[in-house]
Structure formats: C-alpha cells, structure tokens
Amino acid sequence: MTKLARTPKKRTRVLLWLLLPILAVCVWLVSETLHFLNTPASSVQSEVSLVIPSGTPLPVLAQMLESEGLVSSAGRFHWFVRLRRASRQIKAGEYRLSTGLRPGELLDKLVRGQVLLHQVTFPEGYTLTQMANLLDSLNLAKSHRFIAAATDPTFVHKFDIPASSLEGYLFPDTYRFARSLPVETILRTILARFNQHFGPSQQDRARQLGMTRHQVVILASVVEKETAVAAERPLIAGVFLNRLRRRIRLQSDPTVIYGIKDFDGNLTRVHLKTDTPYNTYTRRGLPAGPICNPGGASIQAVLQPASTSYLYFVAKKDGTHHFSSSLVEHNAAVLRHQKRR
Image 1: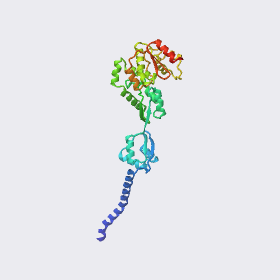
Image 2: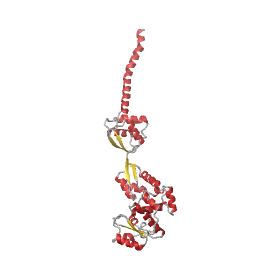
Image 3: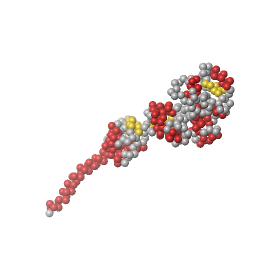
Image 4: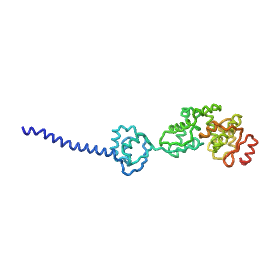
C-alpha cells in the first residue's frame, strides 16, 4: 500500500524534471527575443545605404540586413516580420538606414517606405531631351524610357494636351525623387507642378487674349529662349503678340534651332531658309509646338504682356535687347549691335 501511494508523487517529480528544461528553454527564448527586439544591431551608430529590389523574398532581405550590420540575426528578424504579418508590406527602394535602429524601428521604416529621395533641379528653358539626360546622369531614370513615355501620344492625351509630346508642360523646378520610380510617376509629378502654375485663372486670362492654353505654352517657350533677362520677357511677349496680330512672321532664331536635328551651334542663312514646322522665318504664326519647357515667369509674360508698339528686337552685346517699332529703326539697330549678323 505504501509503495502504491508514493507512485503518483514519483510521476509528478519526473514530469517536473522533464518540464524544467523545456521551461528553461522557453524563458531563454523569451529573454533572447526581448533582447533582440530592444537592442540595436550595433552600439556604434553608422549610416548604411541599402537597395531593396522589388520582389525580394523575406529570407533574402533578412540576410541582406544582417550582412549590412542592420540586424544581429537574420533568422530572428525573419520570424519577427512573420509574426507582425508585415512581409508583404515592406516597400522596395533605396534606403538610408542606421545601425542604431532597433528591429521594430527598422521594420517600421521599411513598411512606411521611407526611401531615400534625391534632389534634381530642372532649369527654365530645358528641353525634354535635356531633362531626360539630367535624370539619367543622376541615375533617377533612363533617358530613353523618359523620352519614350513623354512622347507617347496615348499617355500625353491623358492630360488633355493636344500634342504628341509633353514638351512645354514639364515645369522647370526643384523636385525630389526616389530611385527606381516608374518614369510615368516622375512625369505625373512634374505635370502636377505645371497645373499648379497654370490653373483656372490662367485659363481665363488665355481666353481673354483669344488664345488656348497650348498656344500660351508655345509662345512662352519662345519667350523663354529669347531672353534670360526677366524684365524683358513681357516686352518680348508683347512684340510677338503684335507680330501675330499683324500676320508678320515671328522670325525667331530659337524656333529654327529647335527644328534642326543635331544642331552644331552655328546658325546659318541656309538654316533660316530651310522650311521646317518650327521655322518661323518661312512660316507664319506659332511654331508647331513648344520649343522648351518655360518657367512661370515666361508663362506669366505671355498672359500679361507689355502694352507696346514694338515689332522688332535685336540682341545687344550685354545680353539685353534693343526694341524698335519700325523696320528702319530695327535695321539701324542691327547694324549698330550686330554688324556681322
């Protein structure tokens, strides 16, 4: 009877001895997990650049983070992400991350997509091609892809632009883009900036002048290329509008240059006489389309031109222009300022 009574106690002791190691392992795992979650990968903070390609599997990403010193254990980070059910929420892109981040803080940045942004400034008067080349030089977009999208009529017409190119509507300004953005996203961002500067009030003013938005953009692009002196833009816009009303050819050198393939910098009489859709020496009216992407000041100059009787202008050596109301006065100014024109 005594031996039988002691049997349950012995079984309890055996179970306790079996459970103690398991319990110790569990305590150790919890302790290690808490330590992992609350401790940065390194006590010495440093910045690490990391590019996460689209579609990177979680185990590969975890290994990348460990190899860059951003997490102390790829395996633990992998399971931490799985427990958070965040594996499909991590955004691809280029990141600038600190080794002083705890795993939870690191994961939050990846989920929010706090990618590194690169600044790019497009000067006023840049052409579509120049903008594409600048983006390419900064590794923000391939120039050929940017140009292909910007000259895709189907894409262009989505923005109610009556042309086969976005030339003229890519507003020159400073932007911040992440690497690997689709070129369509970059273009939409730039076009949105244009719409901020050409809204309903500008549309109303264009109608008052008897012009469409597209005509304003074309003329603004010519004004942009004709002068770098801000004070002259309303005057030059006034001259061109006067010539358009009187059906006098604009005779603008920059429009001719835009229509020359592989222009070498030397504008000749042959160029001026060679007819193209952009040659305003051979054709009346506006050129076939914008010849660059004008800034807000040039657009405003067309919408609010100077009230003037001038019909001509010629460049002076200091970069400004001499304006004339008659051809006789203009010819005299040409002899004075550009004897070898």
